[in-house]
Image (tube, rainbow, N blue to C red; front, top):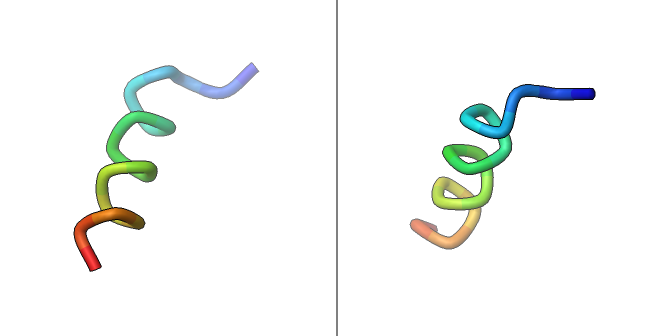
Length: 17
């Protein structure tokens, strides 16, 4: 299981574009 924090930031970065 990956860290929720990493996924949270990852998702934000994707939408940041």
